Image (cartoon, rainbow, N blue to C red; front, side):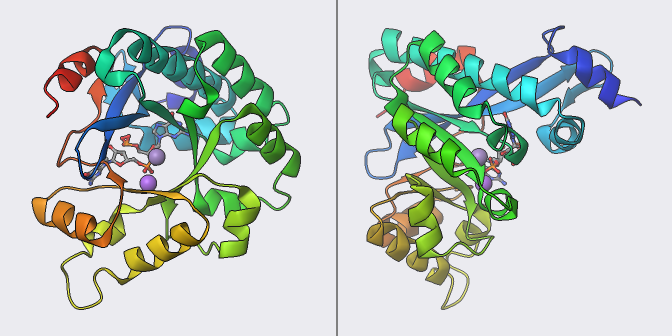
Length: 256
Ligand code: G
Ligand code: G
Ligand code: MN
Ligand code: NA
């Protein structure tokens, strides 16, 4: 099994594709965004999940061309929905970015080019970077942050709560959104301190005027508890798994 050389060919053979998971407003349950999630349909092994091939892509540097394709594809697709589906007029695109992409010198140019070729409002773009990846970068490129801010795209801190971000660090990053890791959503309703991390995150977010998205929401009890706590938006199997792009119009059609 030589995934590395297969992955090299996957892009040009069009074996990579994106699925989309809705992000909903917790009160209205209206879809406010879509997170693009990468899939690889291997000609012999069938579907391969990103947990398996993203690490290979990162080690080999293939994540750079793959990540560029993901940005172009996701922004182009979401802009099509914004233009043609009335229920999607204001949805945003959330795109996962690897540390290796983020520190590449030309990353802001790659983002700029994808935004322009999609014709999408940069304010409707959220780049998701995991907290641990950010903390691992020794010299986080301040220039990159400044240029992304100039472009008007947003930065979401993914898997938030699993690292050690401080308030001052979040402020320095100029993040727009904190995505609460699903392990904290799982703790809701489990014991007297089940909600304490989420309450802490909400306090930080409030302090810095950041949006909060709860991840991995699976049950109605979790939905009710998150509403009670004042979390604005969420995603998870409770509403939908990621879906192929051609299922999105039907998904939006059946909204409340
Ligand atoms: O999609 P789940 O559906 O299995 O994704 C698993 C992991 O892979 C998550 O941590 C997710 O952030 C990551 N991932 C999914 N799509 C992409 C992508 O396009 N780029 C990067 N860098 N990571 C991705
Ligand atoms: O690391 P990141 O948050 O980008 O990863 C998204 C991952 O979480 C994807 O693998 C996606 O399929 C998965 N996911 C999305 N919603 C749920 C959920 O409700 N429960 C679980 N267990 N995983 C989820
Ligand atoms: Mn993510
Ligand atoms: Na996450």
